[in-house]
Length: 124
Image (tube, rainbow, N blue to C red; front, side):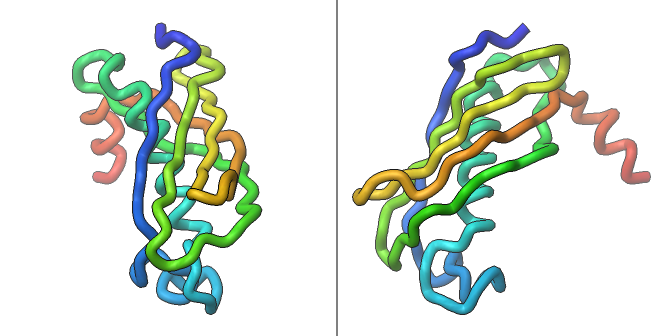
């Protein structure tokens, strides 16, 4: 069983490719909400990756976040995920994202532990 409190961070710099205007989530040259969500998911995946059984990974299932402040081009954004619940295959994380000005987003993310082969077999 995975222990509560496992955490990790993931970082990116706001560039043209991860702006709302380019990603299609808006029309302004600011950090896109989908990019923030992906950064949060990446942090959650990293938090538990080294603690999973051989052949397992995690997949995102639910994300409930607020994006509360814009970040400009060139800004470094760091997302952090902390495991708060681990019940069977279901993992719940508190996630947050910050830039140099402070908190830009926060919420809760749910992931599930899956067997890689079995999961990919569902695509056939």
